[in-house]
Image 1 (cartoon, rainbow, N blue to C red):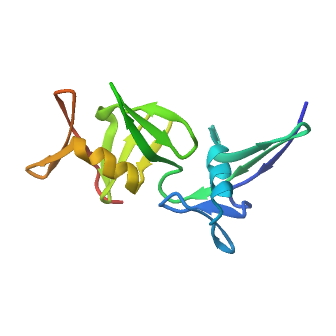
Image 2 (tube, rainbow, N blue to C red):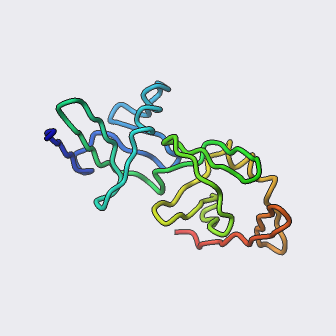
Length: 153
């Protein structure tokens, strides 16, 4: 059995801000390969979100602090459905009934995660959104779905 090292979020030396940017004591991560590596290693268990690194002998789990969300929609693909491309490389089919806004941000609530839309994805998906009497409406395939608005925290 592999040795496990588990680091609590209080002891983690990195964190994620509300925009999905990784930081450590020296500031924001800048190197694209490091950012991509961290994002791709995001996992979740009953104790929360962590990044995982596994070698032949070792599994290292580092739980980390974050503001707002851990998962972000970076891009969308539109075919028969709308497919969301997340920062951890997962793809999921959009369920418009699960969209909501808070603090002028768009989110998707799944059974496991609260996922926030980044600017690029928001721009692309905005062509499906209309406003009527102050209510955002998501329109897809001839159907209209009201976008819930949660009060600002």
